[in-house]
Image (cartoon, rainbow, N blue to C red; front, side, top):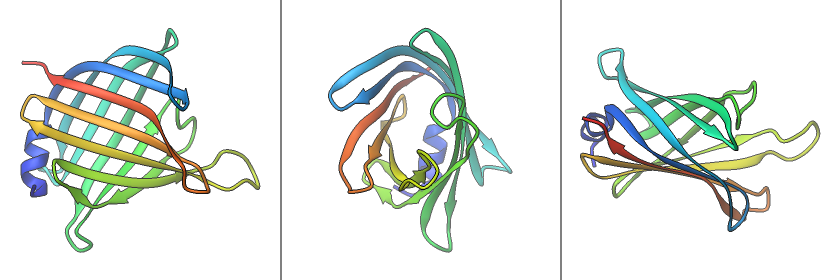
Length: 154
């Protein structure tokens, strides 16, 4: 799907459910989430801001999403007051059948290998958006970490 069509489909106000896993196969939290995706710089970028909670505590975050036409790849910066603490994660990756998939890395501790974070954005129709993120162990094993299932708010 061309990025301009995908960006147009993603723009808007969203509500849904966010599930979080701390251990593979064990849901640690399931909470309502509200998000908004807006155009930035005449649509060259998208800003995804959201508010939710995790284990009863408020959480919020923001992503800035771009399509790099030179590299033909999606790029994303992500901040979140629970998952990212005081860091910014940069991810990038290719188009997929119903959206795109980006990969980045984050620090877990000083002098420890970085862990990977793979995020899939999928839009099967104009009123639904799924964002699924996976922790990627330094040795390559993946485990679902966060799943946001949005429906458009009219």
